[in-house]
Image 1 (cartoon, rainbow, N blue to C red):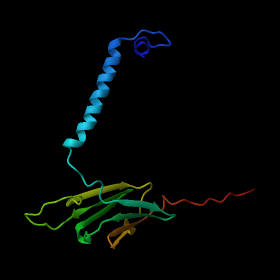
Image 2 (tube, one colour):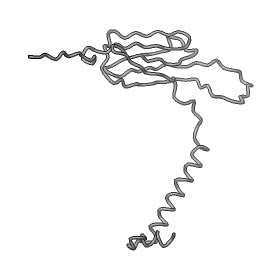
Image 3 (cartoon, rainbow, N blue to C red):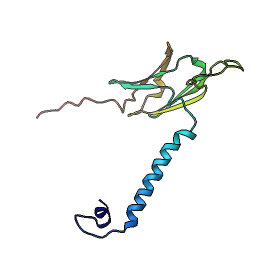
Image 4 (cartoon, rainbow, N blue to C red):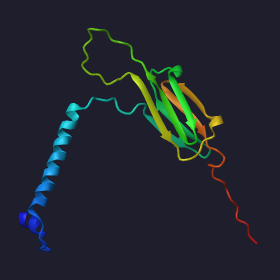
Length: 154
């Protein structure tokens, strides 16, 4: 195997033996970085809020999971084909002497920006929240809607 690496067998072109050592060194460095990366990084709650984006012929629908967040803690804005959802998740303090066994729910500010595949009629956007699900209805602009074209015969 070392003959193959040094000579480039089966073509028998000569290569530097240090080229293979350099490749092995860089692989070991990458491996060591991956092992230590998880040790020093702060744990995160992941992407929040989780959301789904769907569409039909006339509208886009964005549904986001926002349990326990009040509507007045949300800021929703639309520009062109970009929707921005930001706000703050507040979690009441547990007490000074509380010891956590697991802490996965983070409090604090969040922000998500979603690029939609087409322009949106910003004047007609609606949003409502029920049972912890925020639903934003974004009507497509007239230029983004598909047009049916009839073929004329002579």
